[in-house]
Structures are given as structure tokens and as C-alpha cells.
Amino acid sequence: MKTLMLTAVLICGQIAVAQNIQVNQQNKTIAVTAEESVSVDAEIAIVHIGFHNYGSTRDMTYQNNVDVADAITKALLNAHITKQNIETEKLQLTTVNPNPGWTPEMKKDRAFEAKQSWKVTVEASKAQGIVDLAVRNGANELEDAEWEVVDPAALEAKASGAAIVKARSIAEQMAKGLGTALGGLIYASNQTPIRPDTMRHWLDADVAYLVQEKDKTQLTLFPEKVEEKGTVYAVFAIQ
Image 1 (tube, helix red, strand yellow):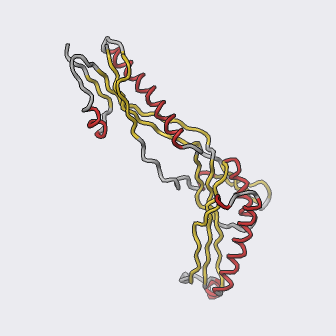
Image 2 (image 1 turned 135 degrees about the vertical axis):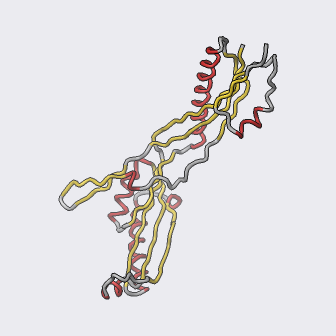
């Protein structure tokens, strides 16, 4: 009886691996590539906050920025955010090239520009409070919000396990169509996906601005699910 090898969605990286599996009259197999994804609630939030100001003199601009930055960081520390979870991302003091449309007063008041920004890592459930706290203490820039899990490797393993289950289900249906029964798993390998840029969750996709009182707007964070994909190449014996 001739060997029967069926391959579903075989990718190049797996072909070289599959060549090590002997296929002959005594080794009848079905090979399947399957992908599955799992999603879980975010456990960690990484919020990006900052303060950006202009001034007519270098010293005044710098001092204003330092004063507000000090208020923001003290508020974070008083909220029991550890120093290890607060990272400076940007620190900048520059002269400004005036916009042609600015008035003489605007050009004078915006002769210098200063920026400071921080990356703050907290439990996902505390992200809302930290953003509110920073804004109350002077933060006027919010850039990215990231949502992660404590153990990415465990989530990846869970996704790979789900992909194996899917691969077996596909192989069982293939074997049934051939009028035979599926045997045990002979070989399996996982393809680790390229993780997206961790700066992928833009703030305008994660928040809603809800007007609660006249002339008052509140920022509300909606944590995203954290998704991981697993892709496996599995070879099963058939009877």
C-alpha cells in the first residue's frame, strides 16, 4: 500500500523540518498546520504621560517644566507607584522656530519649548486612576496605552496548546474522509509569531471622553484583551 501524505498549509520553515520525518510504507502519516488564538484580560497597563510647555525665556520655560514634572512624579510616588515603575522617556529643552501664522505676542511667549514624558507601569485596574492623577497634577500629554499580561510565555504556550487541539481535529476529519483512523502524534513544532510593536495601542482607540458635567470632561480607559496566536505543524500517524 502506497504511503499517503496530506499536508495542509505547509510553510517553508516547516518543509526542512518535515524532511527529517521518514515517510514510507511503514509510516503512513497526515501532516497539518493549524493556527489558533487565545485572548485574556489585561493584567498590566503601561501608560505614557507628559508635560509640554512654552516660555519667553529659557530659564523660565525650564523651571516651569521642572516644577510641574516634580508635582506629577511626587503624586505618582505618593500613590505608591514605585520608582522602578516610572521611566523617563523624553526630556527636552529647545528654541522654537516660530510658525508664520503666529502673532508677535505668540512668538514672544513661545520662544522656548520644554517637554518631559514618562512611562508608568501599573496593574491594569489602576490605569484609570493613574491617568486621572497625572492630569490633575499638570500632565497635558497622553500618548500611548499598552495592555499586557504578567507572563507572556504562558499565554503563548496556551495558544500553542489550542493550536494542537485544532490540528488534531483537522487531522481526524481528514483521516475520516480517507476511510481510516487517526493514530498518535508523531511530531509537532510551533511557529513563534512575530509579536506586534508593543506601542500598538493608541490612546484614541482605548479611551472615550464622556461629558458628565457642564464644561467637564472625564477620560475613561477601556482595557483591551491581550491576544496571542499559536501556529503548530503536527504530524499524526494513520492506520
